[in-house]
View 1 (tube, rainbow, N blue to C red):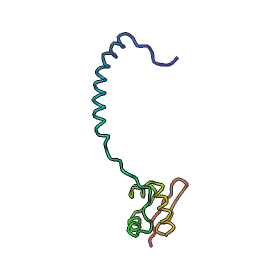
View 2: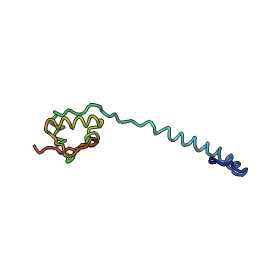
View 3: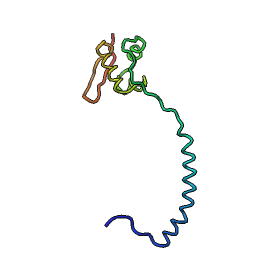
View 4: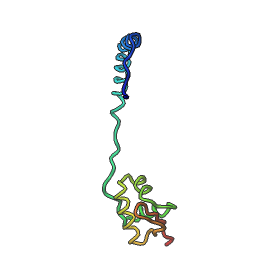
Length: 112
């Protein structure tokens, strides 16, 4: 049925000749890949910013559209924390829900 077919003699010979070269190349690649893997990972916060902080609310009011993703990327927090933060801002009256479904909610800052 399916599967890999048996190689001919000439093809097997070519494969065996190429194998030592490939091993040498793969070792070089492994050495090169090993060095840059020591990068720092950014730590994402779990706790959302304080919804009562005037400075943060002023920054939020400058944004045109607020989504959980935009808040999460701006303040380097998880999206779940950003959703809670936006809900708290809505309860205080700093933002207003424009459109929303169970997946995504879009807010806008209030004029007042």
